[in-house]
Image (cartoon, rainbow, N blue to C red; front, side, top):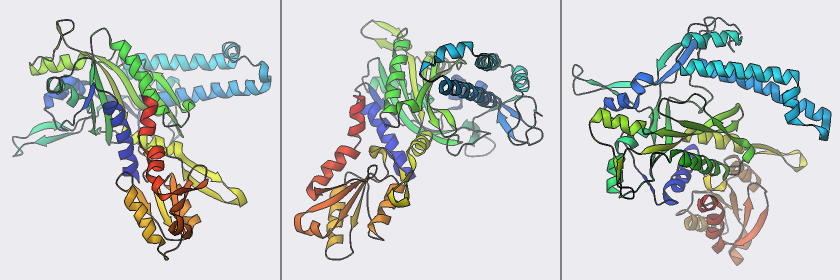
Length: 475
């Protein structure tokens, strides 16, 4: 079920990027690239995480994450104070005035802003001693030992390296790619010329990336081996902010089209920018453990292409036929983790629902176009020709959709099994089906049932569970 869901998410992203647009094309670049690629990109020298250990628990943490979690707790306290006041004052409550005048809220906001400003400055200046001091001054305790016995903060490079060569003595160091973007940049001119692409245009890619995360945590949210869906959009210098805002809006629409609720998403604008960026924002989703990043949109300037041009000695310039100029394009990037999207969908879809008569069910309300199984076909009994009719329906649907056949147990138990894996439709074949060519179709979310003709099933399921339903929202 997991790989089916993952493949459907990738298909939704790929079709939204490449099929809906004439100016975005896809590639599949190599995982192993020349080591100098990663020197040019800055990963060899600067792809580090600031880590800190607790001497009592022997646990290791990212210093910036410790501080971000502490800031999030302060924000939760602020929201609790606001909610208490809202209940106390009722309809006359003025939230903006309360936030600016309540001594407790003002105090908490000042503490949050002070910690955040010190953290951003320390990260920007690579001041590890100050980063540790902020943790100490904020009185942050280790969640395991409950103590504040912290080591110094150290930088740790996140790239995996290995050896490539026929003999050990002459083997050279190569890296597993920590992101898929660099494969797009080194192939920029190849794609532009062979595809006859005119700026603005984009190159999309889905592929594995690898990071030596010391603190892999929160299930599949942070992993050492993960899959990325990235698109680099090449634009004229000076137009990057226009396209940055455009892609922020489009990518948020892509997420919200899934129907989990607009309030589940928000933008988080970066205060500390990567060395290559002049603007950056995250699309954050409200997971059970709080708002966390699922996608990044970055204005990368011309840093990447200029670096590869310098290190390779080959020009990475584009000749613009409209202006008659040669220039290195600027880049706007959208980057989303497939595995985080899987976790997002599972988190949003999982529902425990009380039913009439004291019963309950577990249902995965996965958007129908992403559901691993689109329909289950259930013959009421294993005789009287009903299994043959059911198999005929399977044969009619299987070329377009992933469908299941199930004849074990009662229909109620079969419904529950399909609810638990998010199947949007259950099709029951009964004795009437043999008489008039109709079946009962049951919808997962409402549990409503209706009688439809077998001949209409491909159109019904295609209309409600096909990717087109999602893609039309975007176009």
